[in-house]
Image 1 (cartoon, rainbow, N blue to C red):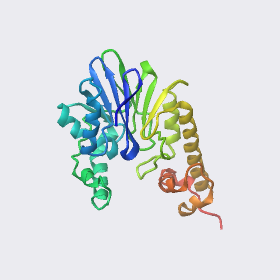
Image 2: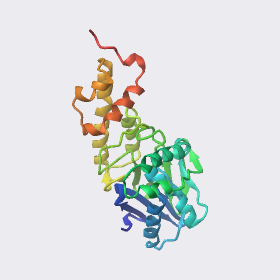
Image 3: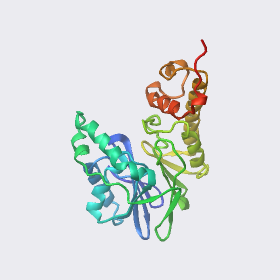
Image 4: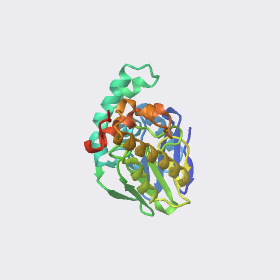
Length: 281
């Protein structure tokens, strides 16, 4: 397990647990690590791989959103490297502890082989936050943090490295599984958020998803189309008075139906009551 350089001084570690991507960005002032994995133990595995780069320690950490698999290594990085600034969108930082405690409660009763280490992890939220955009100065390059809108969560951010045309998309884009609609997702906003994300790219951009292989903008455009179809289908069903519990069976969907239960529930919640018509009888 090692980091792979995908562009000048941009390395991605595709960790087998959860197929999660951790990215290191190098500059003359040091490294920025984006996402820290889902437990203290997993974070130590990332630290070991990071040391093989022989580029020194990180000077900052970024969380793309609040979910445990992207934040539970924060405390370990600080233990290993000293008091590092941890950057996130303000909503993600505010929700990191509560989101983490919920997942720890689920793992406490699970048979997952890594469950015990998840439960034992100390949760450390970000301490540097922003609302719309921020820039990290690495001396010879700028790293841009942008909140393009709500989608996978309310606090998603993307990381843009403009000098090499690389975009780290977090879980706004997924390659190895369908986009993850959770109870904190915003399915009606997500397509528009990807429109803004795509506005930060070029046809030659390299896009690193939260999970899975590195992709190009054509992949993101296709996924945006699927997410857009889901959103419009939810709107159409609700406007025709189809009850929420019948919606899944009432339409054809571009994504596997087992991934859409929360999308429908959250989509119906998002719609104004005036757009949720009662069925005609």
